[in-house]
Image 1 (cartoon, one colour):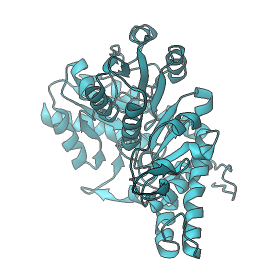
Image 2 (spheres, rainbow, N blue to C red):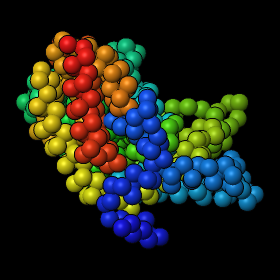
Image 3 (spheres, helix red, strand yellow):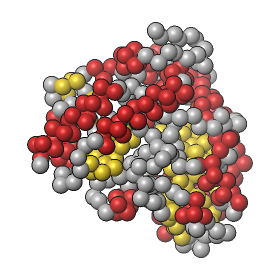
Image 4 (cartoon, rainbow, N blue to C red):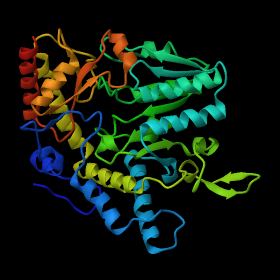
Length: 417
């Protein structure tokens, strides 16, 4: 039975059937079959609470935020800024102005690459990433290296898709200025030992940038406990809207960085001779923001908190365990990455079958998976493949859907062999 109180910290008993009813898209049929949505690492589905929050905003509240003296502007500003506080509480940031709204993880990382590059990266400095990074945590740093003459260094991963302590320590030295690492791999599902990675980087005075896009939908993140310098994530992967994301940064570091975009809201005073900049967080939030997206993200956070990360973790661990057992029984299936610590993400290939062909036949059965390189082409090169099939789970998926996936793969294999 669902038990929801007005308090954000209230929890609800984990009833998968009730939870699934909160996500209207899951009730539809695809190609005559009930939808099985297993593409959550790319983007998760939205509960009615999020959809209604966005709709209600446009119906009752829409106005531009900040500086407006009229009722609608003040009401919209309050709703939008409430989300900033919800994010602060979600990740246990010290201060709400350490929370910067962006369009997503990609923009958050690009903002840092641009602003850090202007502020403190010089020729010969080293920036460290890992072999499992998403392109959005590779390309911005490559661009920065091209502009400044800095050197990009890469931590290799082992055959299980893990960063070992030895491989990490081998690339860090006194020249390291930035260490940019994913918390959870979008392709492998590997959960990296972020706390120890951050601690070691700080021994050399390096700044740490954590790509948390795949972490926040599934687990508690405490940025003060991690002691990361910057943490980035996206709303659309954690059951919120597209086009909204977060950059967390320590206050002193954000204060020291130059702005990324120029325009309205990010200024204190403008003359033709000189412009002075607004205080945090507005210095990094030029122009009219994605107000509806911000309010929708707040609703998504409320929804997650009502279920509770502990319950989400327990349930997804069971899905992952069952999924691994069942997929392992499929003949000629090879997992790409099989880390000891991983989320409910399975990337795999089947000998003699192209991932796109397998994905197409699964789609004909109403099963949505992702195929290709998953924006991790260097990782595909490491494993000597062009791409994989990726099935990624969320707390609204079921054991029955695991069975449908396995049966669908077996049917596809029989057709394609």
